[in-house]
Image 1 (tube, rainbow, N blue to C red):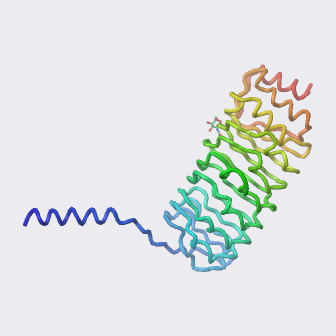
Image 2 (image 1 turned 90 degrees about the horizontal axis):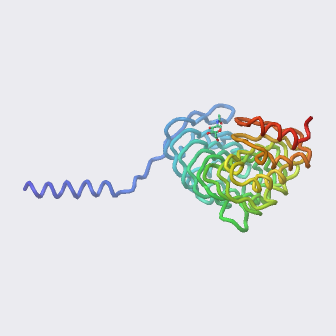
Image 3 (image 1 turned 135 degrees about the horizontal axis):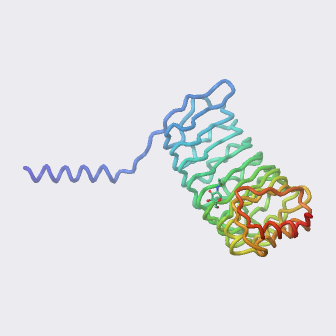
Length: 284
Ligand SMILES: *[C@@H]1O[C@H](CO)[C@@H](O)[C@H](O)[C@H]1NC(C)=O
């Protein structure tokens, strides 16, 4: 009798642990008369259902969402702003955003996306802001056609990159025409095909984090600076360590292309580097 109930218990507990957990969708009712639903910081593990379908602005930031399923958002066809930053998203269904054709702003930053799919963005013809910073993808999409951003001809604000980003390849930015703001986190970038950012024009404010390349691959830094520099561009160079004459050589590119301004943030420069920087930029 004793061993029989033991066996039963064992069976029962095994059965429980092997059942995949299907999390119920919660409901977020924090929607106001401006059609803004504030569902931020509420420990949601799935995209919640909303009490209104006419939602225009949906803030789902700072939850524990791990996946965006095909049907999670399809009712909200009036959405213009969708904020999913700082969740734990590892997967997004290829069609999850396909009915959001009026979407103007999409924030997927600081999640756990190990890869980016061109299918996510293929219907977002109105998109103007896209933030992809702080995930763990190593490349911008699978490579080859179609490019990740092919349909995003109205995009004006683009942020991408993370500590794992290794490559930016020719054609990765195909589809993007001009930008008011571009931010690239490339502290560990290992490969940059010349010209990859060269077709964006005009380009407004460009923020670059290239700490690793400034130490190990100045040719790569020069290629990037050559591609983003123009008289319309304001450059922000951040998180760098410049120690000597050689390390400032890439700035020759911005001098030749007469960029409007350059600003350093969180930069450490030796006296020697500063003197050579001023020489390279012909500041007397
Ligand atoms: C400054 O740069 C260092 C090195 O890349 C980085 O670890 C640190 O977080 C940066 N600080 C800020 C405030 O961004």
